[in-house]
Amino acid sequence: MTSLHDFHAIRLDGTDQDLASYAGKVVLVVNTASECGLTPHYEGLQRLHEEYADRGLAVLGFPCNQFGAQEPGSDTEISEFCQLNYGVDFPMFSKVDVNGPDAHPAFAWLRSQRATGKGTPPPAFAEHLANQPRGENGDYLEWNFTKFLVDRDGQVIERYLPTETPEALREDIEAALAA
Image (cartoon, rainbow, N blue to C red; front, side):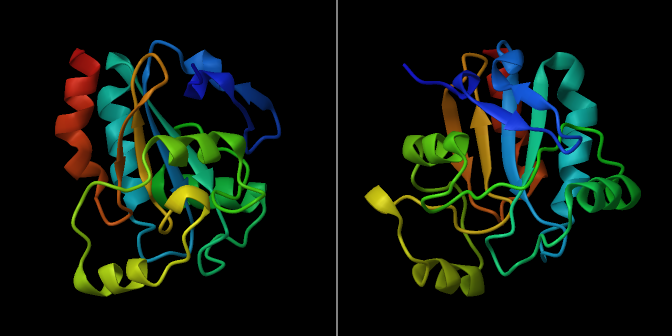
């Protein structure tokens, strides 16, 4: 059975990270962007990291430039932006595609596990979602800051719409940590 632990990703500093190193942790995987209306989610993600890391939560950020070209920077620029503006010290990875033929394998797998996200989008975002192209099997990430909660065995528990704030995930995170 495939799990998140079967994949690798490149960190912003250029090092290869085996995602198996997160085995035994609850993981929140998020595709991020520095120039998005949802960019303030970094603040909430950092708070979750600070509050729950000691209990076994790992927040992993994957910058993506596929939505409105809202992540145009280099890995160095992304790292500096996240540190200076939001104090991000959870693991951040090099820019990836999350949809389409060049999607990072971990995101192709995550999408295949949960093709739709939990949450109720605001009306304008619901209209945007209705107009998005569907990938193979109808799966695609809707926008920046789509979130996947993964259990300690590397299996997807839930997927959340981009508009779901990090704070709205607390109850599910606590349940996953207690399991």
